[in-house]
Length: 632
Image 1 (cartoon, helix red, strand yellow):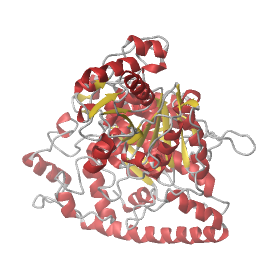
Image 2 (cartoon, one colour):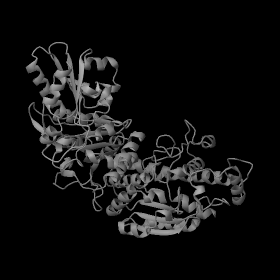
Image 3 (cartoon, helix red, strand yellow):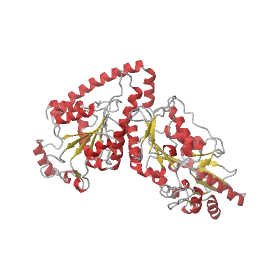
Image 4 (tube, one colour):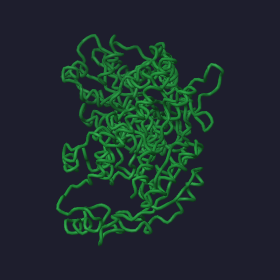
């Protein structure tokens, strides 16, 4: 490789190894995350705080070099990219974020947001459906600053990709609306020229297809699946080093010329960063209001106190409708709140308010500074793109669909929880009460499956008031994602006996109805079933006038289970008997009540009017009251 070609390649990216979170750095995503040591070695040589000893500790507990790149573990890693396809899909979110921020904050002569998002993807990434969904949307939106290098080596774990993958990838991406280029992975001058051509096309994302040989240099394993998922082995490793001209007596070796080159490059980058810093300071001086707002956006602070809606006791509305009112208030206070729905904007009630002129704030190819994204029927890509929006910085993303379709974006939700990203999921139509759409659309196990994800806050509010508080909780949470689980049917706003309920709700549960004496029975419920529990309590009280029954709303069961024991004792009032009602499977509630004290739905639903479906399934206030009377 000649020095000039290497320089051209390096100059394709701008970064600052001493400031991995510089807001105008180019983003590099290793979507093919199994090649993590490639990324670690480059980060090490480029001067990021990653030592050779760190690399020697590859895949060990506590190492900065885990088996796949992990966001927050390794300096310079932009996203967790173990599951194939997630990296390229998240990169689409990063590219959207760059356009949104650039259109908001750049002024002529002061382009403080102006960078590219680069991706290295492999055959496996492009087989995954999430990559197809995201790439389709990227082409539709014309994300010209997204450049994907496709390492086309035609090998996967099982062997040749011919076993399962024979499509014309170039034609597919051209059909998506991408610029498609091709070349040789090992022709570095050509690679630099292809990159320049990709950057020159501002109206289309670019896919650069690079033919390569997996394990190149290994005499016996190059070009085979044997070089994919396992070490070459000591003997083959020595032969490979000899073939590549690498000293065999040093298990870990970096050519001195490489260190020297990157050290010189580091000085060039420092100069480029200094030029940007002066540009930023001039911009901030000339545009102080914009500079202050940019700071608010990056620190996830509201520009004003949110004027959350209020609701009167007895008012009936679906919690999805209450969420829509809350979303409008939150969007005004947090102008960096962006996102959208997977083709369910109306049913999810997620349309953001229009601008003062009445223009919808929809992010399109021609209006890339606006806030609302129509994701189309692409739930998985929506989840991964939301992760990319959060990872980029400066934006607070939300994503919306029906609760039952959370299964389509579950891998992205899991990664958001793993990376501690404050993504908000608006999940409506939360139970069999949605009715006529039938069992395919009636979630019964979905809430339990979401609650099983560590670090995902699953909040199911019981009325309009709780929904507004749930939105406040979601916006204040910065160390992980929140799922707001919302009803389609109208629910009455109920009086709450706990005067501090908007705060105690943050502990996961609070006493909504408190009897005048110590309760003998405590009824736990979430969402629409809080009203059912109150009706059941009234039915039992009518038959047993002296019985003291408390009703507890449990919007976030997992938070309540983690609350200190004294807090749980105040709510559960031991030795009172505890009962539970939730329109879903019983799984997980056994931690709070015996199985035969739980009214649940442990089968799929039926098609019909919601109340009739619930009655058919035996899920009624009368059935709950009968259970309570039998056990007391």
